[in-house]
Length: 299
Ligand SMILES: Nc1ncnc2c1ncn2[C@@H]1O[C@H](COP(=O)(O)OP(=O)(O)O)[C@@H](O)[C@H]1O
Ligand SMILES: [Mg+2]
Image (cartoon, rainbow, N blue to C red; front, side, top):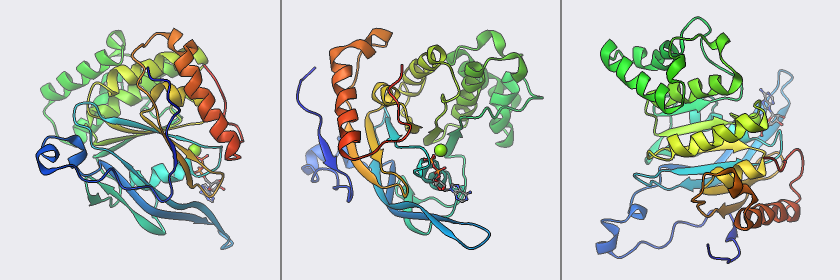
């Protein structure tokens, strides 16, 4: 691994991707594709019943590259209450925006849609459905024939390590297993973008570590674009291709940090000099930017 300092550039306004490559290169280069997800000058606020307005998101612009075959995993790292979930909800189409735009494959996002899937911190399985029936839920809505539903769901259940639990009910599962169900159910819909809002926040460190590795093994093998929210620095460094450091509310993008790819999936990687270097670089950035709060350095 090179020992060069991390490129940490002011991210607002986000500089456009590198100048267009020559035509011959452009044809085969992934950078020739429009961004998978592009957020431009996003402003969002909440108004309470008394009419008081709280600005939650202020002029957020960012873009995630379209990388066929590998995908991109972006992490939002920011203090609690800064507006991370609000941005995710704009991408999901769950909340209206005051101004600005969210483009998916160049098309404006309008309302919710199957092309975006969300995994929340709280467990969201249907208690009365088995694991398999939970994973098949979206496929039923799509009207897929039973045989195809079954094939696709069992494949995913296998991938998330729940092979022996396909016929179990959520109450028979641990927290980590329930999140595996949520991930499989989201993947079943084959969304273009997966939104993960502190999905492992309620899990113990050991389970959390296993789930992080699962994310890398399952999501990163396909060309999934993932927007992942966390306030755990080590989780961000381990998972991310790119980290966006967000300010206190209203959320603004303070830095975009590109993270090196760690070959190893072993827990030892988190103790490696390279990993520590990146982690320290981010902690320095958080300090310099006065971003505190409950951001933590964890397993
Ligand atoms: N339903 C709501 N009504 C009013 N204000 C809200 C609502 N949801 C969130 N907020 C405000 O917006 C801010 C950002 O919320 P959120 O995006 O959930 O933060 P985060 O996910 O970063 O913890 C919060 O600090 C809160 O003050
Ligand atoms: Mg949140």
